[in-house]
Length: 456
Image 1 (cartoon, rainbow, N blue to C red):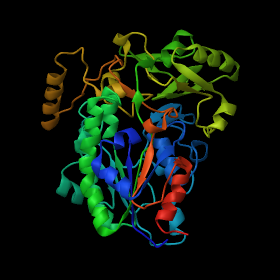
Image 2 (image 1 turned 90 degrees about the vertical axis):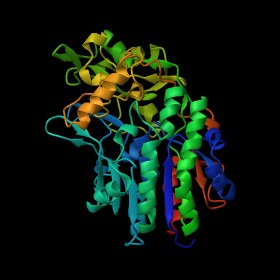
Image 3 (image 1 turned 45 degrees about the vertical axis):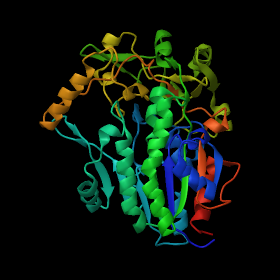
């Protein structure tokens, strides 16, 4: 196969069902090829992207979720950014063994910082010394920052995630990708828009269909650029979003059983992983349960198995069958029922919740919180408060956006477990006829990229 420039778009949440509402992408599929994708467990962003780029399951690359318990630090961290956390050779590093001058741009794929790419763009807020947080991005080379911000405006962080998440962030990312694609042999682009309304309203909602149409229109100029300049296109997704109707409070159960500990400050409760006998890092439909004393393992396993909404409890041996047996994984890994998902909540009284619980705080919460996509429906003045908070931000004052509900029931979509229906699961679309067909394992995507790039 001759060498070719390649664009890989991670259109998170894309499924065969949604493709029917996306005329521009469907045209690419009709002229090229398409396949369903056999994703990995957990089917979450950091794990699947790392598999795409290394060809390894989570047991090989170590990204066992969007976050985990860092045992050596005694802390739970989600959404870390350093590429050194991902073990294994990245696909462009493999290509460079044959083509040392091969150039790569990463536009918002995760674990971007410190990667050996030539161009990097990733969300990175400014955390001022007085506590203010301002939207921005991290770039390499350094001068790329001012180029992109000068041409496109500041990175729209508050439309990238949170209750105001919208198509604007995807449009910015796509515009940045259009600028970088001509400069590189491989361009990686992450488009998050389908995550939002599918989790807010469910995958079968009118809002989901509209989101598919909107992101298809936003992608059209990038796909047109690629077609005009002869760039091969691979569009793929990490997971499909399924309907959700059951939040599962695994940490509250462990606390009531006397296994999870908290400490208090200023009337607020914080998870105490140093003294807890067992606690869970909740990540959508998968939860890693860390058990301090092996003597407690069977008790914890039994409690978790009896918890309503839990489908599977995977010990180390069972994790091996899913390619999830890594030292970072929990001693037990829970998989939720098809329409259930795990909350991170560990407090038993909302009046004792930590102040970050009502904010968009993806780095401080010891688990994933999809309620961050909503304004608190119980607070009639919530949007007014958000407006006043924004005014404080614009005036350069410190602010805290406490608008997120503590009731998770509005969430209507989730993901993380392996899909039951391929039509509602992830997929690939390629501009090259016969490049993909049937079903492609996520661990084969790396080799597919090698073939499409013309690397022997």
